[in-house]
Amino acid sequence: MAQTVAVLDFGSQYTQVIARRVRECQVYSKIYHYTTPAALLRQDGVVGIILSGGPSSVFAKNAPRPDRGIFELGVPVLGICYGIQLFGHLLGGRTAKSDHREYGHGTLTIKKPGRLFAGLPRRLRVWNSHGDRVIKLPPGFKAIGVTENSPFAAIEDLQRNFYGIQFHPEVFHTEHGLDVIRNFLLGVCGARRDWSMRNFITHTVRELRARVGRGRVILGLSGGVDSSVAATLIHQAIGRQLTCVFVDNGLLRQGEREAVVNLYKKHFHIDLRVVDAASLFLRRLRGVSDPEHKRKIIGRTFIEVFERSLQSIGHADFLAQGTLYPDVIESVAIGNNPAALIKSHHNVGGLPARMKLRLIEPLRELFKDEVRAVGSRLGLPRAVVWRQPFPGPGLGVRVLGEITRDRLEVLRRADAILQEEMMKSGWYWKVWQSFCVFLPVKSVGVVGDERNYAWVIAVRVVESIDAMTADWTRLPYDLVQHISSRITNEVRGVSRVVFDVSSKPPATIEWE
Picture 1 (cartoon, rainbow, N blue to C red):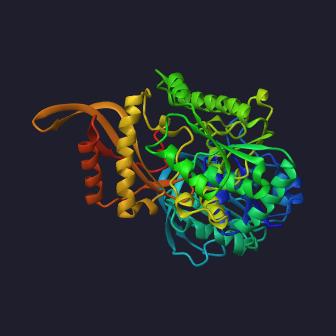
Picture 2: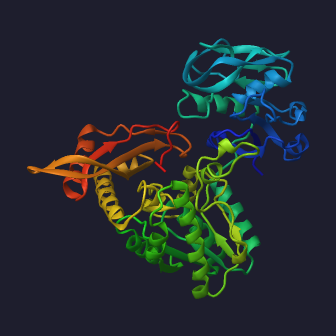
Picture 3: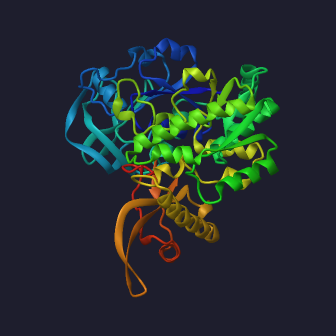
């Protein structure tokens, strides 16, 4: 059994990112609610604890508090942002509200590298997001790093192996952030690097066989990375007991239905059923503009289509889904923290009781790059494993405002051009995601000598590791110009193309 590092979740949007960074160091991480008793952590044999950040103030009514017993377990503890403020508030120091909230880049000056900052430069650019700060150290702690606005931006208690940092080492914006986490795991906790996808596959296949027994499983196969890996993993475990259903919801990209059917007939030899439900989805989406409402309609209709598909299959006991960690954290409010809810996902949140199907989510604890690693180890083709993410609601969340067949067709044609040029240039394989968004606004253009009043297409290209944080990609200007020129010249109904230069945070990757 892999050693476990516990991540106590205090409602941070970055909790899953922390867990992923730990696994990136080949150390198994598990997320626990902040109220988890110390006795349970001891029972699970954790070798270290990380206290996540969070949106609350330690002074707020009902502010999240951990079991104080975690500080008596004798294992190292790293407090991040809200975590360091808890140190000050609970261990005999003092935490106070800052004069102004610090959000964004800052500079950390390391006074004493120690084990936490071993081998790192003395000055680091870090990412801050906090409204409180420690102003008096608890007994036993010393300051080892300062920022422009905090003399206690990094602290340590060498006797108890407690470390606190005011910044976020887990996010993309912090320099050497992964090195800080690795130093904590390996240098402070002494954790073994025994987390691997090979072990995950072996364990999951064994678990699936035990759980399914002789039952039958139905899975919605989109052709994307998540559903493909889930299908292949489940098929390896139970073979012909799996039936996959491909739903054409009318929100697919150009040629997607044909490509998926051909690919899985050729490579997987899985029982694949195709359901044409485009008219049903589009009829229910008519006149709907609110993104959450669209997602819920798509999700409910998706489940209904699955219910009807059972009639042709005959019988099923389980519904399998390719739910990932980012899906879960962006769909579930943590504890009493409604701010943790960003958006809902159609494939998260349970099934109607009338379906009488049990849910299987074999990838629920994995991040996207881990899923790709599993897919490669299972022998899936590169075109599947490295296919860019595509949202479950499809183009339904890339047509802003009301969805119509005409708008979908404009978006499909524009997106096909973008994907073709990204493939030809080789950039498709270098980025996390590239796609077009239909904007429900019109702009004046000129075609020949005539005035053209038509739609606007936004091009979104981002780099990321796990979709929890992302940065916009600096494509070559010539490539951007060529893509824009092709779209405006070849797609009737488009007069203007804009390029999205927003990072996550503060923006999300998808527009809706």
